[in-house]
Image (cartoon, rainbow over all chains, first blue to last red; front, side, top):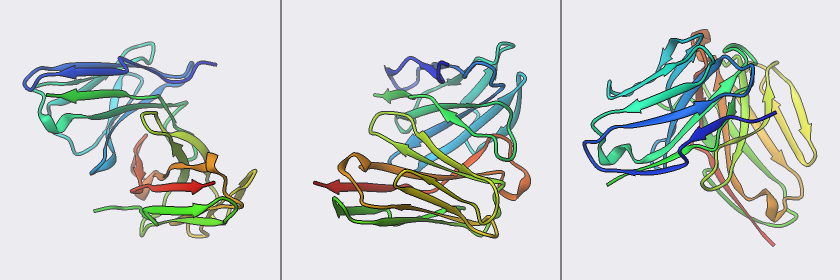
Length: 114
Length: 114
């Protein structure tokens, strides 16, 4: 069974540009969440989607947005990129979101903003 | 505010030694997950603990969830160089209000010298 797949793996963008990252969850998983990982802040929750609805959101500015499609695939978008947005962006999926449901991570998308 | 305090942050030991990593919180979690992450990759799930007082063993790794579901520990017996990596604890369902939101500890960077 394929794991969580994220594309692209690496990308470099310029300040002010926007970026879209894609995530395909494990087959059958309906909950998709996104995290940002940086050396200084560690892993921080961005948002979670279930059945195309955002159910939970972390403390990030509105420049960070996401969506989920009917096939559970998800995308996240960051607009007006800043240098501080350079990070590893991780997508994770689980069957449903709730107590004891194991969350599996993809390999991540490395974003560098120059 | 860091809900999950993970310690120690750095651990450098010799092959064959034992070690324990701690994860403490004032919040109650529905479940707690331990991950291991290699540089440039996503976190890989090691174990999920759900029941207070639960102990799970994975070869030389022993995981324990506190009775009150506020803390957890990871014990590695006879560490090997292949155990080197970043170990992360993550709590799910803090305060019973989160969906898909894992709260991560700061991580423990373990280095096992041959």
